[in-house]
Image (cartoon, rainbow, N blue to C red; front, side, top):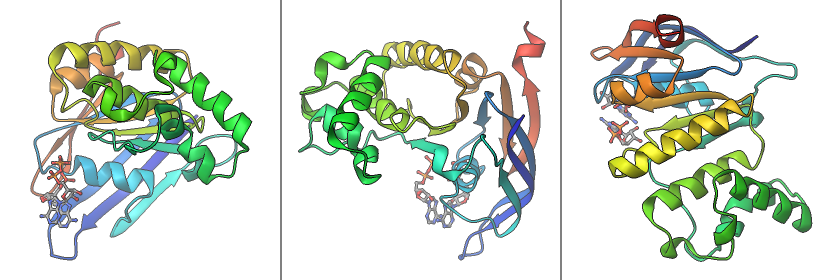
Length: 222
Ligand code: ADP
Ligand code: ADP
């Protein structure tokens, strides 16, 4: 089934910048798609519009209804882990559940299960400052997964990490994705990262931001 359908989306910012023009894209449930292209080509803008964090100037964005994706079932991961320094790792991961009024015991159990997925259950009672950059990003991913989303939007999540750490996180993310029915939309300026991670690469170009080519990786390299 289809998870996201984007029809003729245009985005013009208030200052006149035409960030996106004529975007058409359909993403299937369970797909891992990357948006790749040079800085300023509109990747973040398109991701934010897909996630409902920003509005298109014109065109339609449909997150499919029914048991499938909708806004309440989407999570976001940014380049900065954005953890709260005064909260433990467990309390950081549990935050989205707290906001949604999930009772304390259930919150703890689900946050712990989410930490286990990223291999950090042993750090539940640590504080963010005690963790490395890669570990903070794992916590950020655990926090995004704790609400059991159908859609995961990631904006250059590994851009600030060193190469070895990034490689380990690639493996972990692929493992999490392959064991779930998650649909992942992943923004990067690295063609290597896009091709390595995703089943389909959406290559964008700037001025105005638009889709240059959609390259199926799995079909090309079975
Ligand atoms: P990216 O890493 O996607 O290239 P940038 O570093 O260009 O992002 O932008 C960081 C933030 O600044 C984003 O929230 C973006 O919306 C905002 N931003 C980028 N360009 C402009 C601009 N020309 N005017 C106002 N805000 C901008
Ligand atoms: P990318 O993620 O590919 O680097 P962005 O989506 O951040 O690209 O930006 C696309 C274009 O829109 C750029 O020219 C950027 O400067 C501009 N832009 C981004 N955010 C804003 C904003 N809030 N206001 C004005 N211009 C913006």
